[in-house]
Length: 258
Image (tube, rainbow, N blue to C red; front, side, top):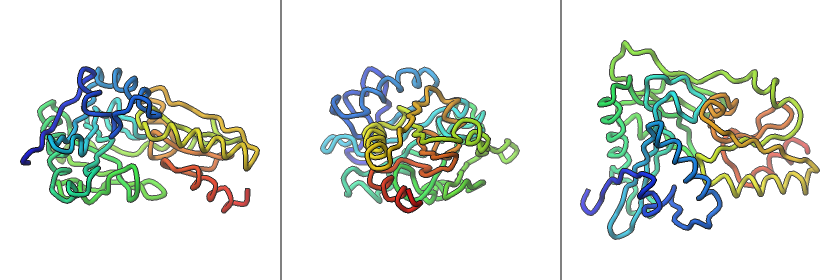
């Protein structure tokens, strides 16, 4: 890892290294993520930055004890990885840095007496693909519709396994009628998208979106969308299980005849 460092962030230095690639405080979601981090650090969250002296921040991993995770998981005793990303510049991709970050998480989880490490994966944007975890000794133990997979590396096979929470009842109980957008400050990128989607819903479909800002990990764990910190629901049906653009929302709405 020549010229590369792994930086443990705190509220004292996070502004220096950036928030999920953002360093401009004027960026939508920046301030919200900082406020979110302040409480999460107290719960044991780790946000580590892959840092190059030449090119600055080039990757990150975020993980937290499973009791406080922001995915719809039953993962008490485990460490849960929220986010893993490497390569704002392409020359940093494929160099093994993601594995280095995962190994840091594994070492800390074992040292702190955790049962293992878990992560929710899928192909596409906003989540890491399962293959990087499989390379590091994880196994796929469960799936959730439409394309999410729970990967786990146990430190002992005798440890109970984490699992997806079944939150289908939430659809009928809370989101049966109307348009709902669920989001959390854990992901700064969704602030701008939610505003644009809400505007499109009103302008093109005469729908007033009810924006639900998930205030804590328990609410994220009860999200019927496996992503945990995002979801779009219309009349009890999930339209988007993960963050999407306003354009994608428009196309989905047209495809279902709205």
